Image (cartoon, rainbow, N blue to C red; front, side):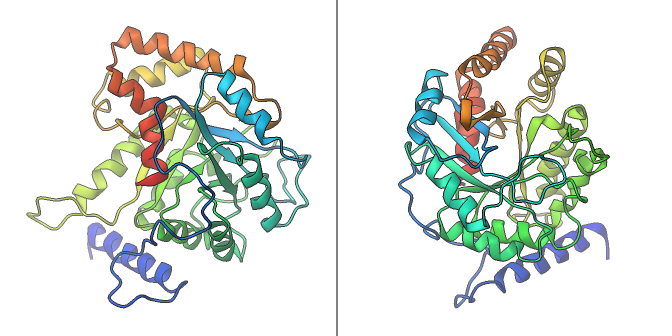
Length: 334
């Protein structure tokens, strides 16, 4: 069996495993659930014109202030974005971790996003938990828009983690990973290098994002992006004119991570090389801001930096809209 056949067979196994978690529909074809699954939270199903922040965190158990959050995001010149829930305790990384149940964590992030139809709640999940697949089901039922993973206790696809990701793909829900060095006081960097995410090729249909352009391994992140984009052609049947459909789709966000010279270097490489065309609708803006004190100044710093560089590179209006809006729309809804 060659590598193409191995990957195809492992993708098929993943599809079948995902299908076993829910009753099989008669003549069911793809392992992707209808968009209607889950509670309707009144969220926009397409992103109106504007700019969006793909990377906002909740770090405390304090009562949500959704109106204030929406106001501060608007003051920063943005129209919405994605909000990541609290991390489940116990955590070896954070001194202040939540003691809320998983259900309470989901309700908490949903409430933070309740003041705007263009704020989308993401559930921060540990894919190594034995109940991870069931937690995906629970979060989707409650109306979660996507998932967040920072796996500092092992490689991102080890153990039962792939089952968890396949379940997300079953529902068509996107997943953002931390990638790149993590300032956590632990020897964890090997778990966050982009090449560690190659096994996601065995998670059919998954939409996933590597955050922070994997800084300082930005070149490695771009190389992985190229490999993922190529996989559909690489795995197609000999002589086929269309790509093999059962492959994951990779996105990247530009959340710091990379500042100043490193950020400039990464964006120049993406937009002045062979990646310029493939990166369309796959590169997203993010800030790593906090819901508790969303900083307009912090956001504008990166908006101004990126805008100046885009003018220098003479990006088109369509490319700029892709970066600030359309890529996130595809991440959330396609």
